[in-house]
Image (cartoon, rainbow, N blue to C red; front, side, top):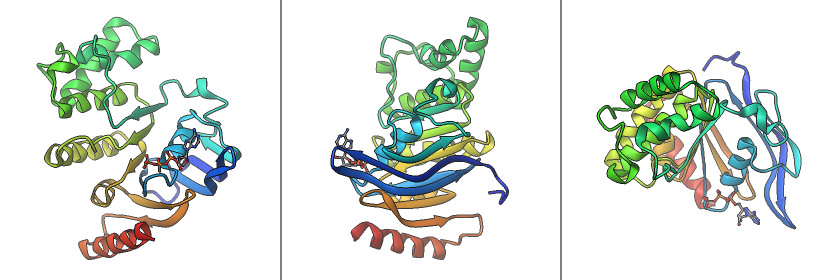
Length: 247
Ligand SMILES: Nc1ncnc2c1ncn2[C@@H]1O[C@H](COP(=O)(O)OP(=O)(O)OP(=O)(O)O)[C@@H](O)[C@H]1O
């Protein structure tokens, strides 16, 4: 990552309370443009709450969340087409074919039929789905459906991708292959990505940076991974993460 990269996502002293329950407590987290951040933590530590605040679905109780300089909850409309989300389940519309699902975001953005068809076709091709454009989701395997939802996320040309365990419902071989393709596409297209995962292996495979949360969501470990991170370094990091998650 370029040391001078701009901050794409910023959480400053952010807390989120549900009634008297504090789910996120004074979190400071900055994500640089072009960074792939893997966010790891035990069940219930607040990952989804953080995700929802970045996506503009939840307002922080205290502190400031900004994405590209705007507050995602208050300025929700500013983010139309600028943030895309890939969920654990593919969330495809069953009555639309693969290409119609990919076109959906482009339709909302007001692209012409020709333009959206061309963009959707290009992304389906990139994701290896040529020949399946007109298949309905029920006719596709889980891995193929997730490929469609990744194509849909990239098709809108959003700079920021929020990913909530997108590969966790797939078998490990399918997940590994898709994960590698996904990382390549994120890098080639200069996206900033926040990637929630429960898997240490996955975090080590995809992240430029791994943040491990402790409960209530605050940072236990924040470690960068670079091309110079050796496999021995990764094993040390794995040990640290395991200790943090066991605490
Ligand atoms: N709307 C809500 N009302 C009350 N409590 C909530 C609400 N949303 C989340 N919480 C609580 O906040 C805590 C953090 O939840 P969150 O879903 O962010 O955790 P998580 O790390 O994403 O968990 P998981 O890994 O299981 O998805 C949990 O204890 C949860 O019960």
